[in-house]
Length: 228
Image (cartoon, rainbow, N blue to C red):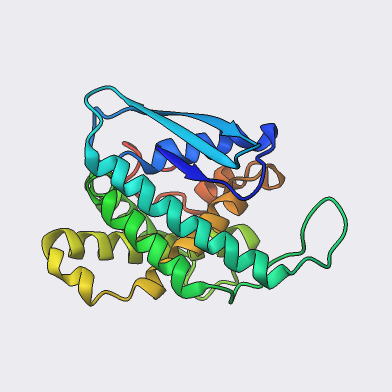
């Protein structure tokens, strides 16, 4: 797969990009491994992506990545136009959240649908257990002011439950992709993306253990025993 590239790619940013592309290339529930290599021709402003899989790479995957790459190029062009050329420093100015939202939602939808089976395997494994945990967590903290950690957990948990429910609904009724509120799903996915990092970052230290102590005596369905 070869495509135009309007700007150079720093070596420190290559590996995360390749990992992301490989992750976005997985669509099966299990037993699928994808690796991606990149070659950059800075003179011709061309990027060549080489895709390898633990089975035959199907045309569907190449078409999917070509589609996503093209839309990402369009998104990059919109960002460039919004920034303009009048800026200095090592990093470009931040792009306001409202720029190109319909295109970002469209990209999210395409990625979501392509990897539906992979996501559903996670929902089947953890969905009911996580739902029961969140119910107990919310019940135990009702009427109590949530601290920062608990608020982040609540926000991430409710967003995940909404996305899981949407996944299950879409899996049972594929035609609903035409009427689903992809904008809301995109927003909730951003809540999860930012919130998980806030829940897990080091500054919280032992907050998971502190929460377990607060929930003492409540059966946590994710674990095979009572929190004591």
